[in-house]
Length: 116
Picture 1 (cartoon, one colour):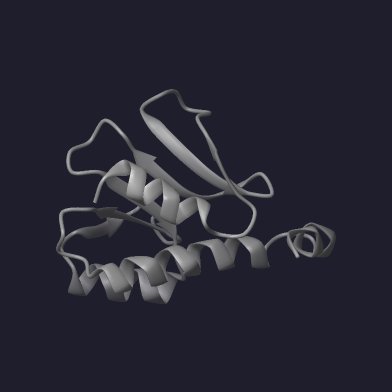
Picture 2 (cartoon, one colour):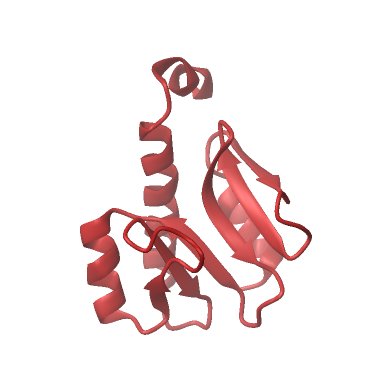
């Protein structure tokens, strides 16, 4: 998967914006100022870090070798996925949706309402 395709996928989520608070090698995708995805741009293949339910995070790590505890993140709540083709696209899309939804769920009511 190319960065352009991945960025388009991430930015298609409601309220998503792209930011570079850690420098040009890490694209951060946020909703209402809260991160739901991070892409390591200096890696080949790309690595994507997503927020995840702790039980699901552990389950996925046990099934897919390309899914590891979140790199430089809370290992219980974040997974880093190496985009080498071993994680099915359908699962990747579901994980992105879940990450976005978890972050939106944690927003204040007013912030959620602004998203529509």
